Image 1 (cartoon, rainbow, N blue to C red):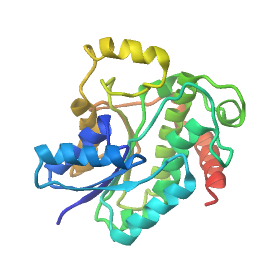
Image 2 (tube, rainbow, N blue to C red; image 1 turned 120 degrees about the horizontal axis):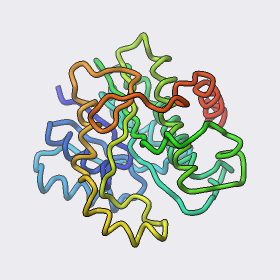
Image 3 (cartoon, rainbow, N blue to C red; image 1 turned 30 degrees about the vertical axis):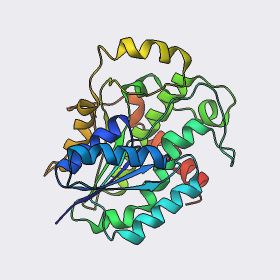
Length: 274
């Protein structure tokens, strides 16, 4: 029976490579992305290499909680079960901004949208035989301390420090969710895909200039996709774990703090009105 995966940000970079590799393994791939044009181009590109790919696009803006709810409704109306959810999308923004509902934008786009989407899709994930939730984080989470007042509720903003905080949130969320789902067949893991040559952070001025040189020394998007693909397809994956590329490692000490995990969950649930 064909397995189904939803990949956020599957229209470019590591997400697109992940979509292609799973399509090559005969998965039914749903690309969840904001830009329909980019998603359709990604589907076209993948089908050139994988002509028999079963692949489609559903629109979502992860910074917009209503858009996330609409995506979840569409998925549940079309699929009784979901074998894997890969929360891959992420971004780095130069300046602080807020969503129309007043939430710090990078927190909404990098964490909160995935938090809500995952919770709303638990029913089809539970209906699968052994579903996998995979949260793409980053080693930059190690620089961050958990401080909602500084990074979310406050007005100060530093693109890289806020990004590190958001990636820490991805790991905190992973461990809390895994604990809540410990009596189910769903596994929940987080990973750092490697330092990969992609278009990440291109709206940061200096990144536009150094990226062409950096790409000469960075890993390919195909390599960056392998950890997610491995966790999605392994017969007996670990649970509540963190991978640095393909290697199981310890995440930062901050990420194992259950008080932080609970605080993030409660605050996120409040913002999402769960």
